[in-house]
Every structure is written in structure tokens, then in C-alpha cells.
Length: 116
Ligand SMILES: [Zn+2]
Image 1 (cartoon, rainbow, N blue to C red):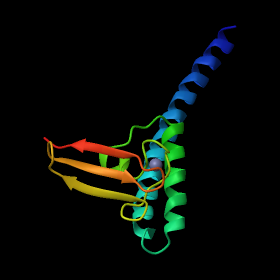
Image 2: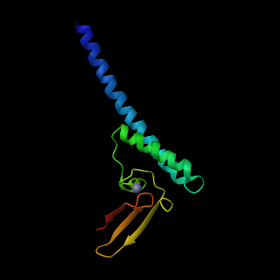
Image 3: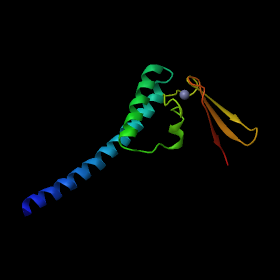
Image 4: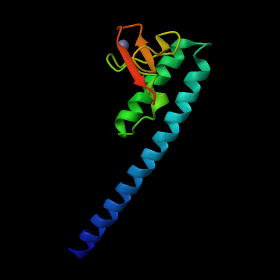
């Protein structure tokens, strides 16, 4: 009875530790994938799109929040990977207030980021 309880506790600790480790490895891999995708964007756009898709899957699996500049690589509506300048258009607009306007060329969705 006591032995099984102890075993369960040890197993629980091990699982939690391994989950943290998986998450850390996931973050590391996502960073590598993002840098590789930026490198291959001009050489082979198809490969960099695939890498961005894999990075997004890892982010969703481990529930990792993306920092702002990485969010520019995905469309908010159709969730497809965007290469800046190829699949998306980025403009700085000053009409009502200074903001960055990102438009997806696949679905036509426009996303605004206001600057303070
Ligand atoms: Zn889109």
C-alpha cells in the first residue's frame, strides 16, 4: 500500500519534470525553426513555410505564447504561414493614428497594430 503510494508520487514528479523539459525543448526548437524560416525565405520559400507550420504546431501543443514580432508570421484569420513581403504586405500608416497595417494576400484580412 505504502510502496504503491510512494511509487505514484515519484511517477507524478517524473511526469511533471518531463513535461517542463518537453516545453523547454519545444521553445528551443521553435526559435531554431523561426530563424531557419527567415534564412530560407529568399532561397526556398516553400521550405520556410513548412518550417513555420511545424513551429506553429509545437506552439499549440505546449501552449506557448508567441512574442509580438513572431505573430507577424501568421495570418490572424486563415492561420496560414506568411512570409513578409511575399504572402503579406506590411505598411506604416499615419491616417487616424500611427499604426502598422499587415494585410494577408491569401484571404485579404487586415490587421492593425497601433503604436504609442
Ligand atoms: Zn489570411
